[in-house]
Image (cartoon, rainbow, N blue to C red; front, side, top):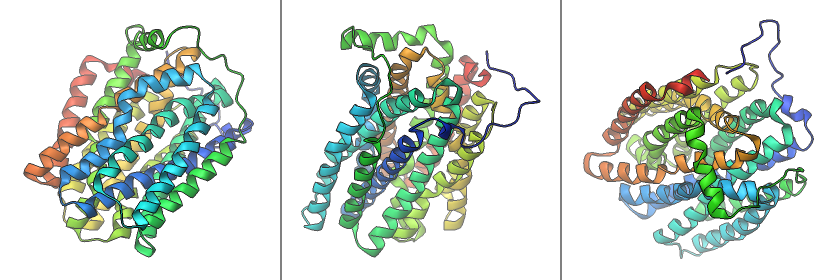
Length: 406
């Protein structure tokens, strides 16, 4: 049962989680990593749009980035079995030279469209490790009493990362070029690595007495024991299937609106502007209505999307994404918090792995949206996806309403 607000209790300090040692370093590392990831997605979509006129080919680049979410349950098992900090460090040690290699290919004029697919898949796997290993590491560092505040600050950091990544990527492309922007990403990844090296590994008992197969089965077995978890994950599936799939089409939509690289970057970062405002507001609340923020945030974002998709005025499209971003902020902030607190501490990584798997519908929705856009155009396809998402959300909550009651 959700804890009821105490009228006499003051709101929690916005930066309360910084009271815990090493949270600041872990948050800063994640912030740089967030900027790098969002810049990667923006630049890959921008480069793909430059290399091909096919919306489907551009969407396939987005699908490659989102593809690793299909293996989110594996990421959860890794988080529960191994040193979470070490997992992050090893991944960043590999990702940074790979990013530099892409920069060299672009600067040499040897880049090809097909190269973006394997690179996107490997870069996208970082989202899994960030959601499972690094977020679980954050929970280990701050403790249960500050976990919601910490995750709210994390959501704000991710939103800022989206803004800076998109705007920074667009600005660097406009001033220097795509290859130079990839070099900047490698620098950000190096900074994230150096900051994470300053964070000690918390004393957490990692679950490794059983086989990987048993761990995966135990993760799936969480579902019948936690009806609320099923409700939460269902909302995640719907939102990722019908909302986030449009992101890779933003450069194509920007061409229709008649803006250049920087204007495209602003449009790509618009949703995260609203999301940042929402996440900061939620972080200062002691007892937010977590489930309603989660569900109604998703509904608001879906409702605003058709405006972006169908209007011909850049300013109106930009405003629609910012307003929708307020909903995205509520959804994203509560998503990890609800999942992480819905199960036992020792199963937290596996629960977050199930969340990653639920997000794994993204590549499916991305490809479907690309196919539809090839037939009827980008705007109608995006608007239709949003309407379908609203209907699916209503139907799901009529059967599994627990998320609203948390």
